Structures are given as structure tokens and as C-alpha cells.
Length: 457
Image (cartoon, rainbow, N blue to C red; front, side):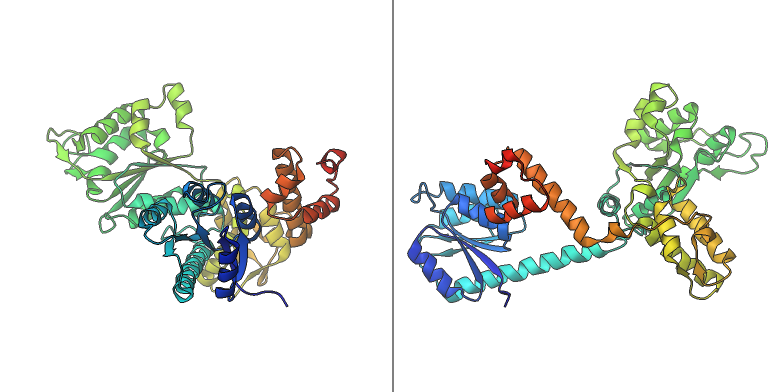
């Protein structure tokens, strides 16, 4: 039968204590190590969640120097590991230092089996809770309240960054291709901020003619120009206390760039035709699909304004680089539009999913959303094909989903990399990979990597 006990690494150089701990902790799969090298080898091979260790280890068993160094190395290799330091009586100073270095807890010698077992079990419970928390975070399709549907690690990381930045007043610049969801993230920044009870005001700098954009942003007084029949506040003033989203900031005319810069510096505005300075408390979030640094080099965008706007810059990857998101979003859009159009439940056929994953999506999420809506409206039945999305059916590649092949390719790549790092030294490679030498030799034969050079190692 397979040993289902939890692995516990015991780092202790005293054979008598090793025997005592193995007997006292028989509810665990006790892995023994008596020095730094064997401890690291066991750590790499078994990756135990909990470790007990004596600070006095060879080559200087009477000093804690080696133990402290190994403790730091263990936490660098496996930061999630819970290390319980076994100290001598009246050695509280070293115990406290161990905790400061990152140890989970300590226990004094001679240890009481019941007390040590309790500490170890608490460490396992904490480790399991943290692992469950990480699993739940990774399984979330939309981290936090971003409103972004994603399973892509980079997009999930970006959504967590948005959640972290939301609580500050920092000016945020969102960079990404058209249709990647810049406004959605801007709204998330507002919704997760202390300003959420106030207005979120958006303006597209590319959609408004240059001669009207200034009055839209800064407002105007009655009689300031022909047609100014009444005093009208601008978007900046309307967003007071909230968030102003400046979309396509790269299209802002140079004259207005200077005026916006002054506002960012002074936090006051003057309406067109007015003389009074009006203080405004607003958070600025901007976005563009353009390369602003290129515009700066051609004198089409002010460098000083760029640095005012780019306190925090977030790059949004295009849909084609977001692994698995195209089909995930397609299913979500089809479900949403099916409910809106009351067409009944509609499903994507495998050929449609393959075509969606194979397509490059130059228009990103916006294009996918439009095609999904068209597919739901125009489909003749409840099963959507590739042609319903305006795509050509592509030949499926089932081998990409063969877990054994994926695992073998990853295993081979890891072995090749490690052999290169250790100059084909089999002993070192086995230690780094966390396997025995015979196992590594079997893997070399399996993947045809046992070259003459490697065999001599």
C-alpha cells in the first residue's frame, strides 16, 4: 500500500535523537537528514510542508552558525515550508533569532513528544489552509472585483495589482491594444477605491473634435463663446471627489496637454471665459493604445505630462497572448447573449472552440464579444459552429491536451536545463532535480539524453 502519511523532514545529527524522534512521530513519514547536503537533497526530493531542525549541525555542531545558514537556505528554496527549530535548554536567544529569520516555531530539548506533535500538527494545519487559499485564488476567474473574466496567470496578476493600487490616489496609465478592456479595469480601480461613492466620469480624447475638447474637459462660463448660453462645468469638475478616465490620452492636442499638466500640478481649473480658480479633488486614470514614448520623441506628446500621468503603468496583454481566455470568454458571451435574446441554451461545438482558440483576435475582447453576439442572433440551431463566428474550422490538435506528452516534454526540458547548469554532473543533477541517480539514468535513457559525455559523469 502507498504510504499516505504526511512527510516530515527531521534534520538532526545525533543518531539517538533521530531514533527517538522517529519513534515519537511515527504518525508521519519521517525523513531523516544529518547535515546540510542531505537536508537539501531530502527537501528537493520530497518538498515536505513541515520541517524540524537542530541548529547545531556539522561541521560545527556546537555552534548555531550552520543551522542559521541552512534555515535561510530552506526558506529561500521553499518559502511556504514551516520550520520548527529544536533548541537546547536556556537557549532562548537563538530561538528568537530563528523566528526572526522566518522559522514557524521552536521547541526546547529534551522535547516532550505530545508538545512537539501538537506544534507539528498546527504547522500542517496552517500549511493546508494556506495551500487551500492559494488554490482558491488561482481558481478564481475574476480576481477581486475587477470584472475581468480570465484564467491567464498574467491577467490574474494584473487584476490583483489593480486591486492593490485601487486604494491609493496614484495616477494610473493603462496601456494595451484596442478592445483589451482598459475601461473595464479603469472602472474596477474606481469601484475598489475610497472614491467609489462618487462619480466615475469617462471621456474619449479621440472622439471629440479638438475645438470642443477643452470646453468638455474644463467647462465654460455663460457668454464665453457663441452658443454658451449658460455656465457649464467640465468633465474634470463633474468628477470632483471621484475618478476621471481619460481614454486615448495619446490623442490629446498639445495645447490641452499643457493645460492638463497645470491642473495635475496645481489641482485647480479655470473654466473657459472665467477668472476664478476652482479646486478639484479627482483621481486621474488614463489609457491609450499608442506608444507614448514614440510620440514624445516626435514632439507630439509632452514628456513632463507623461511622467505626471505614469505614476503607475499597467500593461494589458492582447487576447491572443492570454492562454485559454478566448474560449472561456466565448462561452461566457454566448451564455449572456442567449439569455438576452431568449434563444434558449446554446452551446459551442468543438470545431467552434478550436477555431476560436486558433484565431488571432486583432480586435481583442471587443471583437470576440461582437462575433459572439452575431453568432447567437444568426445561428439556425442551438449548436454554434465556427462559421457562425465568421471563422474557418481548423483541424483540432488533440495531442496538445495529452497530459502525458505535456509532462514528458516538461520533464525532458528540465533535465536538459539542469545538465547544462551542472556541466553534466549526474550526482549534482540528481540532487537539483530531487531524484536518485538510478532514476535520473532511467530518465536519460527514456529521453535519449545519455550522451558519452553524460555517461562519464
